[in-house]
Structure formats: structure tokens, C-alpha cells
Image (cartoon, rainbow, N blue to C red; front, side, top):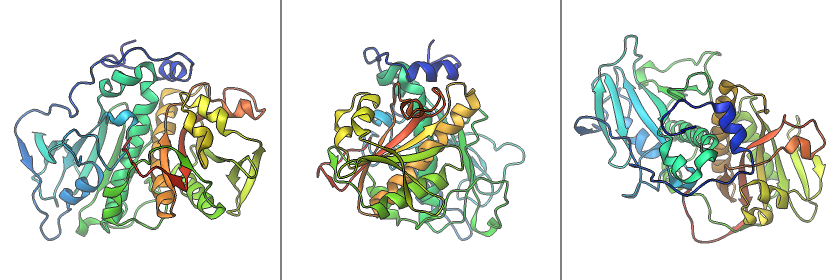
Length: 377
């Protein structure tokens, strides 16, 4: 199965990614940005009543170094497979049309006219160049690609709120293969009531723009258990952001090793007793440092018999939710690092439930003591 060029059998790809099979040698990742055709153009400054595309994209997608590794959204291996196309309507500083976005240069390429029925404002459509992630992770790439897409959607969602804009319309339904996800941002004069049919993110205290640009995945080791109020806040953020698609718990260590989850009344309750972190370290591609993490937030479900739309939906939602949970953890004084690669991680079976139902989809390692060195992932 050629994951870089052919349509992907996502059910088979996920089953193989969850197996103990190890990836082969690295292959070339290709360009860090899709080679959009035609000349590039800068993003004009927004005028009165126009959507501020320049700041929205700077806070969510633009790279802050020449290599393209440092971006406001994390990515497995800093490979950044997610590409963004802008469908621009009226009320924007760019003329209406379809554009490809270059995050290394913070410029756009006009690809053609806008489709019929384009709404005022901009719709950011997220698709992927799988080769970038496949080059290092091989057959384990597709879950990571989907998680990365969810993280990028969350970065756009947070940028919108940090700029004081109204709720964007979020689409993470998992139905289409292209684009995988989309967010629509209305211009200021067109913002109004959000209907119940539109997907929205969870309520939370919004970060300032500088916080989004400063966000980095903390370098291991991440030790020191976050206090219960921080775990509650992080779990609550993740639970709300996943919109019922996933279940959540956290593995904590001494003095009382256990798995905890959020009870309906907002308190922490025990899901299982015992030390889970060494097992999680084995399941997480053998990353030994996870055994000493202060806590590990876990998103799980997505059963072995899930079809492709459900697989896409679960992983997109997991990436979106972990991104917001990461920001919540940092705002509460904890360091955090997403953990996306999981093999043989059937959490339900390990807890005595029927196998194949409650696989770990994504994780977030948390700590109160960590290395001063930071690295974007």
C-alpha cells in the first residue's frame, strides 16, 4: 500500500499502525510546503469591517523560522503535513477567490475563482501531503496525520478567539477525505447567532496572541504530578472539545498510582487503581520518559471495527481536544507534550473490558518540573 500517492484504506492503515510492526528506514520528506502554482502575494492589511486574515494566519499557521519546524500547532516529528487552502468571499482584504497558503513565507497563491455560493469571510480548508509524515513514520503515519490536522484546526480556533472574533463554524465530521477539516470565519459585520447544527469549541478563558506564538511542546523529562484542580481543568477542556466522540482519563503516579476520570459533578473519580505509566511508555512507541511523567492524559475509544469516517472523526477530534487541553495545562502552570503514536494500546482490554473497543487515540503528558530546553513537536 503506497501511503503517499494512492487512496488510503484507512481501516487497514489504522490496524497496521496499532500493531507492533516497526517502521522502515526514513525516506525523503519532500518540500515543507505544497508547491502552489503561480506567483505569491502578501496578505493585505485589513480595512474597516474586514476580516483580519494576516493576524489570524500568523497566530495559527505561520512558521517562525526558515525551516518551517516552529509553528503554533505541534506536529509529529515536526513534519507538518497539513496544507491550507483559503476560500475567500467578500469582507476580506484579499479579492474573492481560492488561494493556497504558504506558512513559511506567510504569503498566498491565487488558485482560481471562488466557488458558487461562497460565504462572506473565509473558509480555511485543511488537507494533507502524507509523504511528509510517511517519510519518517512509515505505516504509522495516518493516525498522526489526522491528529496533526485536528491540532491545526484547534490552532485556528484559538487564534480566532485570541483576536476577539466570534465563534467560527467548525467542521470535523470525518466524512470527506478532502478536505479533512474546515473552519469558516465570518467578517465582523456578518457575525451573528451560531445555530445548533454548527460545531463549536468548548468555552474557555482565551489566551492572548503572545501565548499562542510562545506555545511549545515541553522537552522531556516532564515530572511532578499536576494538582487535582489542574487535572480537572485539563480533563474538562478535553472532554468538552471532543464533543462526545471520545472518552478521557488520566494516569497519575505516586503517592497513589491510578487512572482517574472526570465525574459528572466535575470531581475526579478513580477509574482503576495501580501504576499505568510504564505500560503507557511501552505502548507509546517505547518512549521510556513517559513512565516518569507527572500525569498522562488519554483519549480513547475508536474501536477496531470503526469505519473510515469514524476513524477520521475520532482522530480529528482527539487532535483538536488535546491542543486545547495543552493550552489549558500551560495556563495552569503545567508543562505538556502531545503523544500521538500508540501501538497495542487497547486500554479497555487492559482494564478487563472486551478487547477491541477502547483503543488509545491520543495522549498528553503533563508535568510540573521539566527541562528548560523546549522543542516544538
